[in-house]
Image (tube, rainbow, N blue to C red; front, side):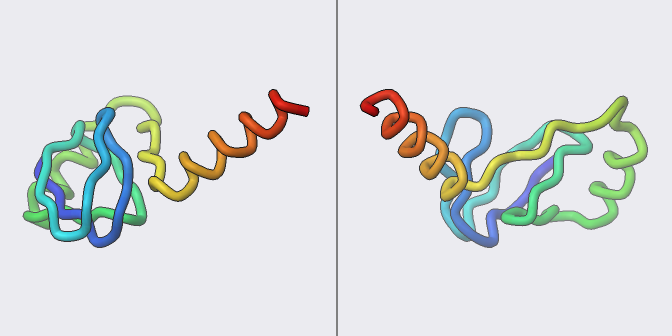
Length: 74
């Protein structure tokens, strides 16, 4: 399913910038991206099996890394 980033985020091992259009697995959702085609999103949501792993916003990923490094140094 194609989505458009509405803010900076991290998905599929890459940083995604606002306005960027990219593919995600059917059923994946996050607050920082939206479906390009809302009808396709409804169909994909129905096809998704199990609970989809939510994408992580870039800011959350960075905070976690900094906290981990600070803990390692202590």
